Amino acid sequence: MTATRVLVLNSGSSSVKYQLLDMRDGSRLAMGLVERIGEETSRLKHTPLTDGGTSRERTEPIADHEAALKAVAEELAEDGLGLDSPQLAAIGHRVVHGGQSFTRPTVIDSAVLAEIERLIPVAPLHNPANLTGIRTARALRPDLPQVAVFDTAFHTTMPESAARYAIDVETADAHRIRRYGFHGTSHAYVSRATAELLGKDPSEVNVIVLHLGNGASASAVEGGRCVDTSMGLTPLEGLVMGTRSGDMDPAVIFHLMRVGGMSTDEIDTLLNKKSGLIGLCGDNDMREIRRRIDEGDEQAKLAFDIYIHRLKKYIGAYYAVLGRVDAVAFTAGVGENAAPVREAAVAGLEGLGLAVDGDLNAVRGAAPRLISPAGARVAVAVVPTDEELEIAAQTYALIEKNI
Ligand code: ADP
Image (cartoon, rainbow, N blue to C red):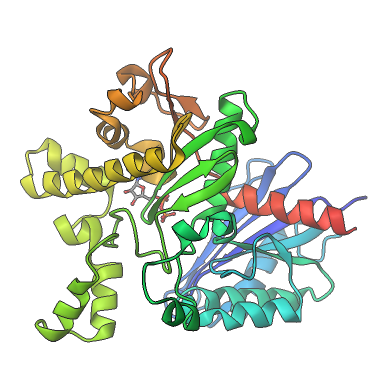
């Protein structure tokens, strides 16, 4: 029997998300989440997806990632899907920062681990947790191929003109300061799925992808290759997000230090956790913001308007970067679900060939779909993202090639 299953692991600092997929058809066999690792209130929620299985929950304290993965392995084993199954082909790990070193998915060995570790200074919040997840999984199944799939990889095709900041070159190089971009797995998947929706090969189409989740980023994809993206050295740059400011005059930071008396860590927390929509109106969930707007709440309306203004600027900028745009694709929690965001983002852009049809925009569903009026010059689409499927597919393709 050939091994066709891939376990996808997304290890955060205090959480592990996982999905087990069968790559014969991309179907999901199980999924789950361990949260609050290291706290008294840890929780594991496991959902088997075969035979209409129902979710199970564990609420005992889970001390660390090793305990978390062992608990996940036990839950999978209970459904006959254990890590020792001969059908398991590989584990695919989401790794946030691959710097300039990793331009594609990579089979993990000790040299790869060392390189991911070397990148910790540019990804202090994410890479340590990703490494812990990898090391723990390797200890559980040392013989099994494990693959790192990098959030930054899709953006490594950006030209230097888009990837460099206009700061002193020596200083930038000494500290590896450049624009790396994130959400790459989603931008890759969605740009390809958009081409498919248009019935074209990815090499034939130029797409602006708007990944609007709690974190949000835009990318300009020319013939299947990323040529610009809105996140930079870290995920803080670019669009207004749930809790991140996005673009801002960097001198705001000096001002907060000199005049506001704030520390580096306080400003880091302010800009990453207390800004964006939550900083502007106290809510970061677009559903709640829309509800408040419907009740006449001015603060929520202003937060929405600032969010849309920035989004529209990026659509315009990437239109100019690409020269010709075939499609604008909305994805992730907000992009897939919030029709008012899609409508407002392209309102007034008819001159660029962009418009949404009110009825099509109101349709809900899990399938990729067009929301632009028939015959529009530029297609506007809703294309649900699937980062786990993309990680599993990239992992499996690499393993198959190596067999
Ligand atoms: P992330 O992966 O970045 O945590 P998601 O892509 O899951 O985020 O998006 C989460 C966000 O999607 C929520 O914070 C909320 O603002 C938005 N969202 C989810 N469902 C809806 C909906 N039905 N209508 C509007 N916004 C929604």
